[in-house]
Length: 108
Ligand code: SF4
Ligand code: SF4
Picture 1: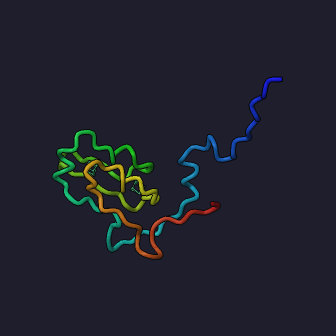
Picture 2: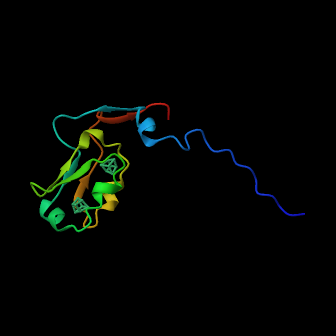
Picture 3: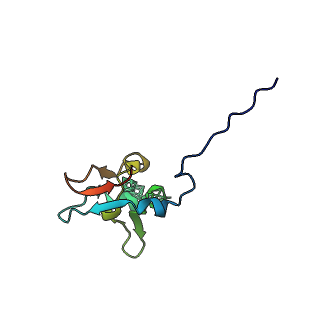
């Protein structure tokens, strides 16, 4: 007798758009300083694909061609840590926000 593939029940969250999931995230912005810092903007000018502009799930990094800079919208960072490893020259100084600031997840 042939083995049959076991049926799996996907968790409820599968298929939920990321925007809906982010609805449950609350932010407390540290107005004094960004916890994400571009170390050297000159490296960004020479960075061919600018991967930070697409690997960040909430589009924190934006290339501004007019001023030839990456801007950092740190207020909406969900602290996934991807930019710690995703920037080829490791040009992003990454740390968690100060205690009491940053994002807070509700409902797991
Ligand atoms: S990936 Fe790194 S070096 Fe490239 S543009 Fe983004 S921050 Fe700058
Ligand atoms: S930690 Fe994640 S969410 Fe925050 S800026 Fe880096 S890639 Fe974006």
